[in-house]
Image 1 (spheres, rainbow, N blue to C red):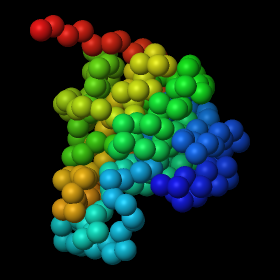
Image 2 (image 1 turned 90 degrees about the horizontal axis):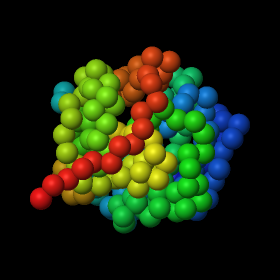
Image 3 (image 1 turned 180 degrees about the vertical axis):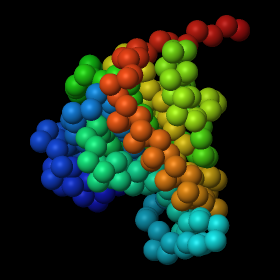
Length: 221
């Protein structure tokens, strides 16, 4: 992740005027009031040397560990930028170790660095999941589902840290990988590209979206 952190910092500086780079995270402030997030680390010690692609099944994998969790999210954000879209971009480090980069980010920025209507994390397994963790905003959930996602449950991600601190609703969306954290991890390319297309629609229709606040979920015994 150290190398990718430097590479993505240099790349974002060619596309954005306002980029903040630290050893723990990168923030590029865009002109679309939505933030998109991915983490730069994987559970594998080294990047894969061999990546295979099945043209028939449209699936990628690696015997050294694919690392699509969350390199698929990083790839997706790059593709959105290449399409001329400029959401606020956040890349974090050490999500797999407990969102350590996200913790450092909210320590440095206790409030959102720019005006945001909501936050999208691209770090969920599967094809069409949307996960809201401890954010219980029915209007936001209903809005996200209009983009053909289905609400399900998850345990933890960067937005579990960032959204409560900033008071902004957030969602984690499927980005196509399955069997993450194992050497059997697969990346279904079609599912990844479908999510990229949906997020593109979300970014282009931002004017129709309201500002969604973070509402803590209430639990009973």
